[in-house]
Length: 159
Image (cartoon, rainbow, N blue to C red):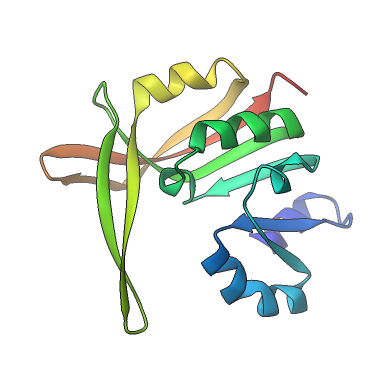
C-alpha cells in the first residue's frame, strides 16, 4: 500500500506512520525502518499528529475506543480511508471473540461487527462520505448473521 500511495502522491516524499498495537509495532518496526515506515503504538498522543490521509485498515473493529479514534483522525487528517472494516446490516453492533494463533500462543481478541445503519449515522457528525463500497467477495454468513466488509473514503468536516 505504501508504494501505491507514494505513486499517487506524484512522487512526493510520503511520511508513512503505522499506528497499531504494541505487539504489531514490536514485530514490524525493524522491517519498517528498512522500508521507511515508522511503526508507532496507537495512542491519543500518536493520533495528534497532522496527516493528509489516515488509512485505517482491518483495525477499527479491534479497538475499544474506536469512536475516539475516528474523532481524533477526523480532527487531524483531511481524509480518512477505512478499509476492510466488518459490518452487519442489523440495527445493533455484534460482538465476538476471535481466536488467533501467533506461533505457539493462542490469543482471544474481542472485536465488533459494526451496525452499518448506526455507523453511517455516526460518520455524518464528523465526515462527508466521498465513497463507499461493499467488498462482495468478503460477504459471509456467520452465527446467524450476514456480515460484509466495507471500505470508505471520508473527508473530514473539522479540517
